[in-house]
Length: 110
Image 1: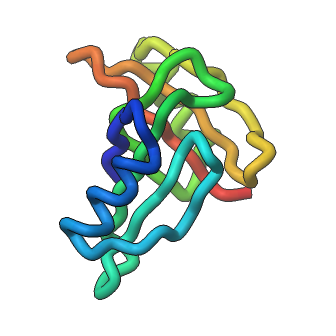
Image 2 (image 1 turned 180 degrees about the horizontal axis):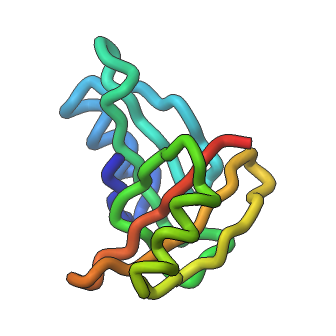
């Protein structure tokens, strides 16, 4: 799922809902996830500032085993930007920086 950093959450939310006909499926205030009405697997998140990590990721990828993905990222020598963490909103996640500098959020739901 792509994640777009925005300055004005309300304006961004209205824009994507009005232009693309998306619906809001999650709102934590600092991050909002929108979904396509016809296909709930088509999602987009808007973020102002990640509340527990040092930077905003550009994408969020859900995996079956986040612990194994974390170990694999370490084996590959990738920079871990945000450590493996159980977050209060019900996910276990970490961020890594790929070889092109993109920061990716990898998660599993608890």
